[in-house]
Length: 201
Length: 258
Image (cartoon, rainbow over all chains, first blue to last red; front, side, top):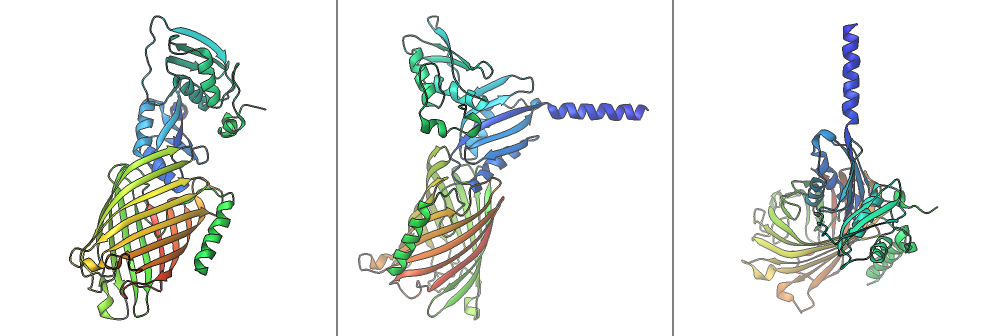
């Protein structure tokens, strides 16, 4: 009986360990041929515990799971993609505890005491969208913080009013492929979005 | 000229199709490196035929990337033919490639690299590249590639310096198009067609209408980390010293990513 209990305990422990993974997603630029993608794959398979590595050639999206115990930062993903000879864009990770981190390898700016915070709706579906929307907003000079929530589809931006305004940020987000209250994305840009990011019915 | 027109027409028709992605070129070198501390091994078999000679060669070719922009390469040919004179080690080559330009986009990339390769006179003295020049030869050139999910274009421009026999020096230029037969998938399972041109001008005869233009029709099957290559190269125009002339070159090889 004891043995059975121990075996069940080991089974559940193993199952639990297996569940403790961080889900990464990164859009890789420069994948002009599928054969070349093996260099990228090998660079990540070197990391112990990496599982479910998939590369979608057309969109350049690479997804994989890494043990949460590794706590692999997005900066390491950026470095590994770079060492494979490609460029990482729109990175995101959903940690085992549910926390989502996004980034593009750059350090966040610090807001001044005059900084304003505004919230507006932005269309999108997934964490890939989140990375793209936030990146587009942060690309506007004067934006110090951008946070888009997948569930509520709301974007909260903090910016320096002397350098940026809401319309400018909304315009940048629309140009990246995401409709918002003021601007609508052009057909071509929208159609170029990965299938998982296409939000229009 | 008819041949050239037919080839250009074939390429134009294929380019007008909705094609997606390709693999590494067959007779050209590539500026795209497959990541730091990675490399490829490429064993191949070549038949080089000309009016008065014919060679068979097994070439062991490998490259290794020290970084994502710096690679080294080695090429060891063994020749075997009907006479002892032709059999044995060919000219061993060692080289370096440095990628100094990279512009990536979604599903596309543009790369340019500089390449230096030294071919040591380890083969017989036949004044024939790969088989045995009888002289050390140094290649200095540039490789460029524009690869996208719609089309792959590769180009190479370089000069072969032969310090001890300057008349054998030559300008070498290549242009290749890679076209897939099926839609891109990963892991790779792809059949690609290659249309590759090579031009050569002998230094001694520069400006004297002494040159050659070759065309290579290649086919490649790529499956996972392996590619299997078959190419037939033949001259479209050839006015060169006899040791450089070739009626056709058959290349049968494979490569594997390590």
